[in-house]
Image (cartoon, rainbow, N blue to C red; front, side, top):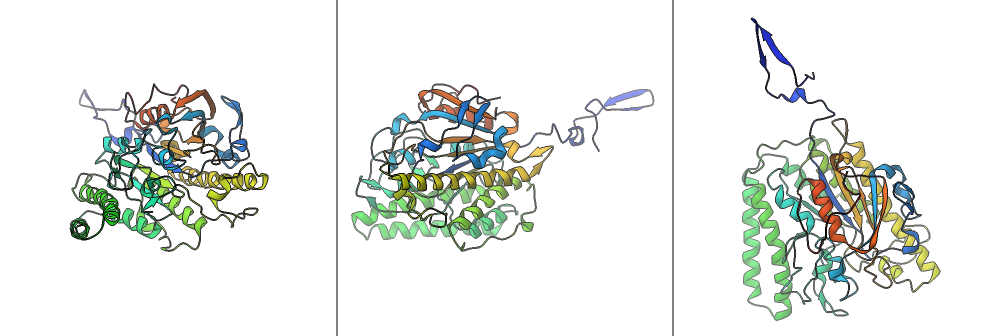
Amino acid sequence: MTLSRRTVLRGAGATLALPWLECMASAKDAAQPVRFAFLYMPNGVNTKHWAPEGTGRDFKLSATLEPLADFNDQIIIPQNLWNEAAKDGDGHYVKESAILTSTRISKTLGEDLDIHGTSMDQVAAQRIAGQTPLPSLELGISPEATGVDHNVGYTRVYGCHVAWSSPTTPLAREINPRSVYERLFRASQPQGPAGKQDALLLDRVLGQAKELRAQVGVADRRRIDEYMSIVRSLEERTQRASSGMARSWKPRMDLGAVPVPAEEPKDYAEHVRLMLDMIAVAFQSDTTRISTFMFGNAVSNISFRFLDGVTAGHHDNSHHSNDAEKLKQYQLINRWHVAQYSYLLGKLREAREGAGSVLDNSIVVFASALSDGNSHNPHKLPVVVAGKAGGRLNGGQSLVYAEDTPLSNLWVSLLDAFGTPVERFADSTGRLAGVLG
């Protein structure tokens, strides 16, 4: 039953206006939460096949972006963005770890990580803290890499994270689909002794790590420090989940009806799909409203031989040296990643919510921190934004900005669309024209 907002009670010659009732809001105008997801692809793109033809609403998708054809009215393709703070330094770590912070990271072997900013996803997460059981969900495919890349002198930890809750705290990623499902399922249940037990276990792990640190050499102490910083982020999240901050929260779907994913996916492609499924479930159930996903760590050389026409790893093909065959394979790998992005968009569109879909109430970004992987070019970053953010995004456009427009301007615009506006983020100079509806 739906009642008009003007409905009154009449009787005995008197009228009484009703207070606002849930049934007074039609499915069309009921407020829905906005979600934000960021999908990161390492190693850049074959630039010749990335940008669409045309501008504004009159554009044609490129060969690489063609898998997004069904979402033409829901995507924004902003061009000529970059992160100036990461314009030099090494080829990958400086650019890729800071894609969501728009900052310049400190060069370190591991003991003093500092990215000099909080990632924009965590700015949003901190502002809506307590509204969902999980403040955010960080997912990946490849295990955490430790040690130093001696080619450039940076700790590999930088290349494993795009989400930072503080300048010195990268957020631990989950790479096991079954563990993600269990985490979502447990978060949807009332917190009890299990949450306290998790916190105790994490305290014990940190205590043991501190004891071990005092007994090992300098290089191992660096690795332990890296590990401890990540465990601390888990400890903080566990405490928040068990604190009762979200006791009034109710899941929007029965997670018990969700098929349990495989613990050990048969291959990389299945692994990716399962993780994207978990993002869709997390958003549909409203267990979290913020998620990041890394298709691979920086300098990823995952094999794509499962694609017809591809015979080498991702990083190898990105260093194409203008070889025609490598460029062809590079583009096929890029297109495959875009197709997975499209898959997630499809899952969110299938999930109905009110008169629309979860995608209508989401912001889903796909990006790489390099344009041409061969030259590690930081200009003209490949970025796509999808979803409507509850009507706050002006989709269906290819938007060309002045050369070297700050990527942080996009982050300011999307924080506004998410409902957590900021006046400035990193080196931003304002919101991107045309993005907000």
